[in-house]
Image (tube, rainbow, N blue to C red; front, side, top):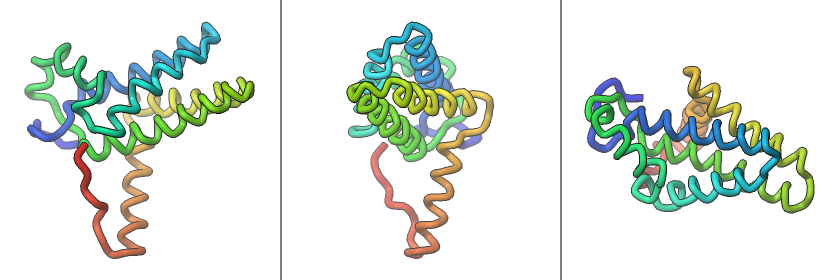
Length: 152
């Protein structure tokens, strides 16, 4: 997380919105026993992973809803946000497979892991950020290179 606003970073109100949408959606899906909610979340986050923040419905909504807050907000790296969303997409995709295979409990457990990670991140510890750091440390140790940049 960057302490000062940057034009290329993702403002923290949008990051918080992303985490809140995941947590709220999965929680409501579980309460009402509607796996389709997790399917919708998967489909909402997938474009952000494939094509970056400009294809993210959450980013677009957050940019408009929090326009004033975003101007002076701390930011997060687009690469880090994309990495975190990639984990969510992989997990929600696995949950979709579980639901399709009638392994409902497994689907909810996998979805619950995404919700738990979002909750913990909202409380101040980003597990995906920790994994990103570890991934890059191991990559550097093995190959002596920085992680490849990608448009987020």
